[in-house]
Image (cartoon, rainbow, N blue to C red; front, top):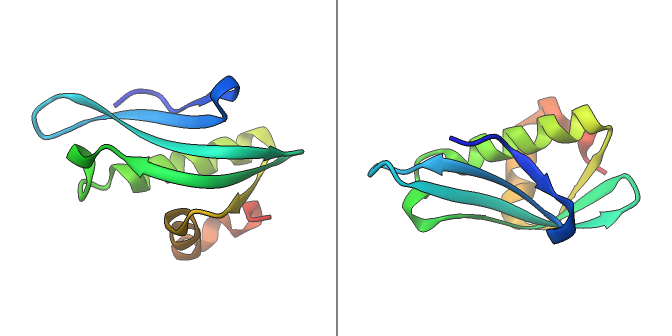
Length: 95
């Protein structure tokens, strides 16, 4: 696994995870900037990571990053909406 990172120039959060074959694969979220809010437009995991829980771990890292940076999240992507609903401990981050 690689460290979660924000790539502001690309409006993307990303993190790498190792798949079952030992290959490093990406999970990312594209976002739009709305002041101190990040609208999460699309979350995607490399197909080799699907079913591994990597996307959920990524979303947790994204939420922790938002909290540390004082950001709010506006989930637009259905995965982000569902994940945040399943994790009420992050409801304070939802714009």
